[in-house]
Figure 1 (tube, rainbow, N blue to C red):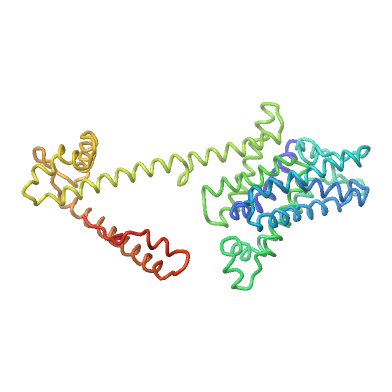
Figure 2: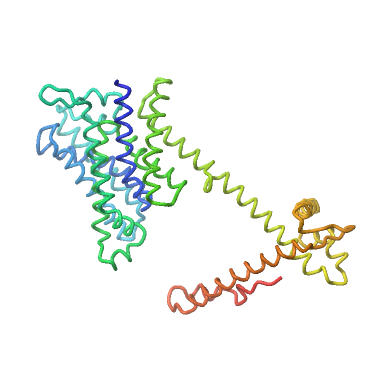
Length: 405
């Protein structure tokens, strides 16, 4: 039963974290999670000095407010144009986190303010903290806390999905339509802060960051549809949590640590072996494009010289190799492939286009001309821009788009 509760808590936590994490990935604000996960400690400490009660809900409120202050402080530094956003984050969160540590060491020496529980956490102890009402054990307290936060996050995304999508991808259009990107930004940061603070006691700071960014980053490699991205983030995160739990039990290591490791490994697998955007798929696609370019180059060369008096020489493998500066082995390999596809025939040492090869070449040329037409139209539009794009106009050759063979 304890194992089931641990896995259930982990799945609820990862689902609650993955939902706002998806929008952090889309807004390129992943590092903000790391900053918030550390600076909320200062909010907890300050709230404790006010309430003198470690069980007060004001500790969560203080932590959430400190998360918002972290975002605001970072943006103030970034707006000065004296530093980038990542540099501002690197200054803000160590500063605020260090203040919290100093306050604890100086003013709360005799108070059991467990910073290790807040920052590191250990998921295996989460079921030991029970929610008891009138003597009835209702289950782990963390499950109810994170369940409420999960419902809050789902409700927030469902209600403000249009606004979130619009302010994420086009702030100018959002303003023109009457939406406030600033309000949506800080509303999202509030959700991130509340989620992070609620998950700390159960899983710790490191796993909060892993759950909020890892599944969303992995899903982003698989789809660009925002609705599918949200669903995939939750499913991938849940699979990582369950797999990490059983691996931790098998190897006898930290559950939170193993879940974070599995999250990183799943991202790595998709990054390398993803169907469309994985490194292997990209390398395969580039290799195929290189072959197609070589084939078209050979066909164009043969087409240009097939009716010339020197066709016997110009369309020979040795001459093509010399003109294109390719090795003869490469010419022979591409020629064999084109002959096998019915685009070429070989008579003695001369390569001749077939009707299929001419049709394929004509189709390729029509696509090439269409691309050149659209590109020339784009350049004409650029030419009318009188300010910052005029330098681009000067660098574009006059014959760009005039493709010929």
